[in-house]
Image (cartoon, rainbow, N blue to C red; front, side, top):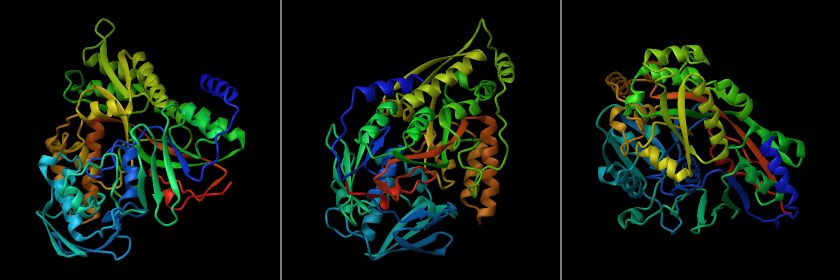
Length: 492
């Protein structure tokens, strides 16, 4: 109610509308951090980079790897050949994308001294060989059934890599969009190559202010990161197109396994049993969001098919805390970091209250996105909440749970260390077929769910709100921005 009251006041004092623009103005909760696909790991950057760069491999609707800008032939268990397609191979600087650019991009990521967070997933590559401008061979050190799915990094010009040109705030890609501008304190602008339709990404942290800008005509499109009451409010206005669908983005509570307070499994399970996920989903996230028990959805070919053992059981949580040695005289006190996005703060505040009810005192700290994300990557946390977005390949288990994937070599940010899980990950990588690897991934997920280096929360639903002038935008289950490939804006 407070959100709607504030919104009403803002509308009342802001009667004038914004001048019409031919650009499609996309409102964002968080600005992108980097336009360099070798380093970008945050959701917004990754989604925009998909539009700016081409990649060797992408995924189909069943989340299996398929060729993207190249055809692929598996010559042996450890030898793959890629042939680049003829069309769409011009970089923004006018040079033609060749196999040498592909090789330079992957060599850079694989070089330990460059500290790319994507290096870990390429560990099985032994060497590469350029056959011609159009062909490149990858030779592996071992059989890796998931290998094609690793080759999703955007390809950069070799010249940019050789000259160490920074691409954090500019792009030199060959994707369906080209980079136009990103001033220091301004909005990122990209342009669709096929028809020169421009898209302007407008970061607005506060959800209420984003909605106000939509009402005033300063933003044309909003996707996700809105509380239920604001979506309901906009439905009543009858001025916008509103749609939704179940999503695959996995939201979780991360725990730092280096912290003595969190090394006791009883404590981690107590936290899991203390969180009432269904209530949070009902009142804050809406009907398209589903309770999660693993990173991959159950519908994924390698997704976990087991049940959800951590339903809301505050009595069990209290018993586990007592077993760990905590009570009213000796309460467990933890720090929880989250972003300053209002919706994320509301979720964190509810979790804080639910944990307090079982005897866990939580000190909530919120920061701007760049700060909290930097702290998480550096391991400066006890608890935090984030979402994994766009996860399609089961190599996520190596990236997140293998003991050799602690940053900067991967995203095992909580320093989880399990010899059994390490072994299962390596066996799954070398499995002969999907059926064998799926059995191993089921076991990995079962162990992780029992040991809880992460506490699974939910798969966030996808919600799209557009002005009536916006047509043909397709809402994707992982929340990526591929809908911009076909979106149209009617002329005023």
